[in-house]
Length: 107
Image: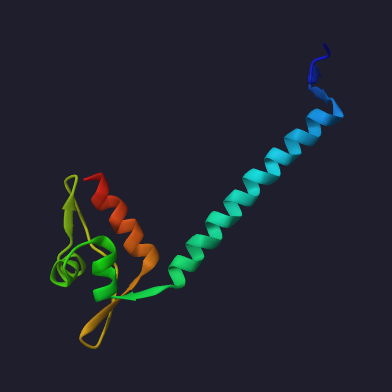
């Protein structure tokens, strides 16, 4: 059986079908990374009210506002939920909410 590739000095020689498989894997990894980046950008653009955000992370609106104003001690560090005040309510980016939720779940 022939090996898939051989190394002579600083030159690598690959069989064509092995090279095709390798390029396919590289393309799949790049496509997955692009999809994740797109999802992240979409989450940054999606804005939630404080009521909707509190429902998403399973806490009351009062608790959510406390996370925004005072923060939450997680693992010895204080983390505040990023939000923008609009009148009497807050607007939270879905990306920031998911990041904060991940920190809460690691507690």
